Length: 76
Image (spheres, rainbow, N blue to C red):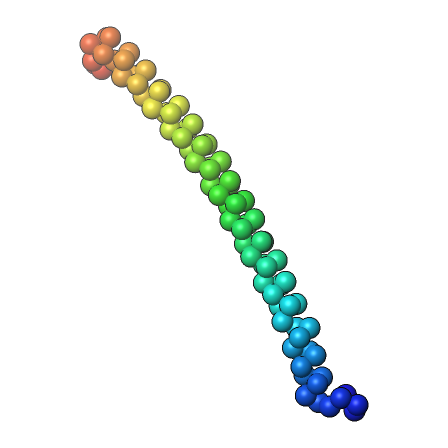
């Protein structure tokens, strides 16, 4: 710093710092996209499980209603 001055030191830090910040920014953006994809996959898995349980429940209800209709209504 004695040879070149304080301003030159600041300029060098800025020249080195800006690309570094840019690389950090890009890496954070990549992590955001990966995290979003993982969250989407987890949500899709949960939706598929919910749909499967709903289909099973509705199928069971349909079978019970079919049995009731065959017997002519609820038993007394």
